[in-house]
Every structure is written in C-alpha cells, then in structure tokens.
Image (cartoon, rainbow, N blue to C red; front, side, top):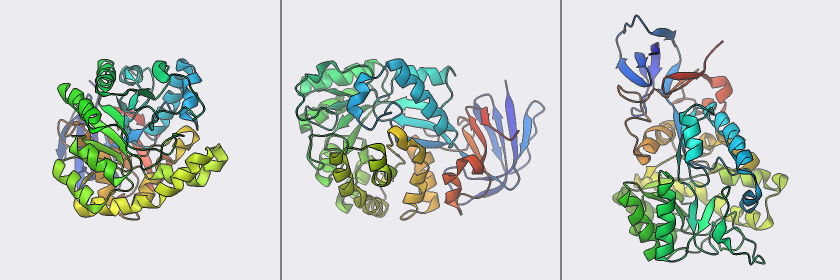
Length: 408
C-alpha cells in the first residue's frame, strides 16, 4: 500500500479561517491517516517536504456539464455517444489539473463516465452525476425551436434532458434516472438562458410534480436539485422539499433566509454568465440566449450578498458549456467581489462536500478523509488569485492518495 508523508505544511483544512503552521499529514492508501502539528514517522512513506506552501483539500465544483460540448444543447442529440464520452474525458482531465478532484454533473453525464473514472480508464475528478435532467414540455430542458413539432419522447443517449409531464411521468422519469445510478435528481423549475421557448422568469412544473420528484429521490436516500432563477421559483421548490437550488440569480433576502432555515443549499454559477457576455458572439450563441443572459448577469453578485447576509449554505458551481469550460477558475475572481477568500474556499470544499453527503470524507483534511490534496505555492487565504492560475500555483495534485501532478 503506497503511503506519503507531507511535512512542514501550512494547512488549510477546509474549516478554519486561517492557516495552521508546521503541520504533517500522513497518507496511507486512499485515505489520510494522521494530521499532526508534531513530526510524524513512517518507514514506508515517501516524504514530501512542502515548507512554505499551503496544503488544502481538493476543490469541488457542484455544477458542471461535462457532456455539454456545443453552444446549442439541441445539437447534442445528433452526436455520437462515443465521441461525447471521449470529449468529456478530455474536459474532466482539464478540470482535475485545475485542482477540482470532485465534481457534480448537473445533467448529461451517466454512470459509465463515473465508472470510467473509478476504474482509472480515464483521468478526471470523482464524478457525482444526475443523469438526465427532468423538464416539462416547453421548459428549460426542451431545446426544440418553436417551429419544431417532433415529439421529444425518445431523446437520445447524448441528450442532457428528458421531457416528463404530469405526476406519473415525473415519477417514472425520476425512477429511471435513479435506476441508472444517478446521485440525485435534477429538475427544471424555471426558465433558462439556453432554451429557446420559455420566459426566463417563468415558473415550470406544478408543485405536485416537484413533490413527486422529491419523494422519489427521498425514497432512495437522496435529493433533488432544481434549476431556479426567479425568487418565486426558488420559494416554490424550497416549499416542496428541494435540497439544492441552482443559479438563484434573483433570490431575495427573505428567500435566502428561508433556504437557511430549511437547511437547503444554493449553488450560484456566476462565471457562466460572464463567459457568455464576453464570448457569446464569438462562439455563436443564439440571439435569444444573449438577450436572456444580459438579464441574469447583473443580478448574480446581489444574490451572493443576500446569501451571505442570510448565512445560507452556499456552494460553488460554474455551469460552463462548449468552448467556455476553460474559464472554470474565474469563478474565484468573480465571487471575490462579495465574499472573503475563506468563504469562497469553504464553499468549494466543506460546503460542497456536505451538499454531496460526503463530509467528512471529502472537503477537509482530517484522519479518515479521502486523500484529495492540493499543494499551493503561496497562501490562497491571502491571495485567492493563485487558484485562477492552477498550472503555476498548484505544485502537487493528489486524488485518493495518488499523485496526478508533482514536480519532475
């Protein structure tokens, strides 16, 4: 069993808001065995001296789409599943080398990709997936243009969503995704930027349909995440028992407080709107998407202010697609306009691990946790911009006790 002893680390453990100086961390196999402020000894361990550097948990992105390789989600239906999988493998490898050792795919990925990572057929972050997202007809997951009369009932394997109308259909669709190994169930509860026929702030799914999805997820010991932009849509899904609210750009303070009382999580995804604003025309984003994104872009930072004031469980997500995935690390910079470096790092470690029901196995540095470890050349609690340049700042990347990056 391979073992590694990190010595003389400045430790960010995912919990304290300052570095702990001079720590020693012993990794055995896939797990962290010991964490101590006194020297440790292990005859079998390889010693890695990280004096002057920060040791921290691997990052977690709770809202990605690793199979979304096109500007138009509708065109994903026409792509070869094998090509989509290989493209996803490339994107996931790039995410790992940005320091993201775990990700939650919020519609599109499946158990095959998760298994490929587990079996090391591909190199990438640990993958928690939601299968295909559930959408009503004409909802955010219905990507048909208004003039398209083709029945969407048989969406192909490369699609990100499935259309399900009515309580019975929602139950069946949720059960099908859970059967196929989904970590959680994704529903579309409001309009969206990339869907062509729905108003951005419109409500989607009836409360009975939402509750049906929540009930099916809870029967399997898991939860529902809901795409929700408007304050009204967020209120509805929280009332119906949704645990994870995605985007939430127009959330008001009282709704953020409601989410805090309910123990729910909110996952803002601010970088995707900036990416669409700055590069949308370049990549051929449709006109209706450019119009919608201008509405949500300015609201994003205000939502962070409300979530911070309410003390809501606020996770870290990015929601990028197509050629925009390379902007993933810019989410740190955008959030820094409102949040402290500690608040941002905690959202991408401990809070997201709690969201995934994986804390304290993920998101922290403590005995018994999985050995997902980053070594940062500097102090990210003082200079968060280090994480915007992971190729320079991350000297070591370890996932489950295995090095994926280290100095030559």
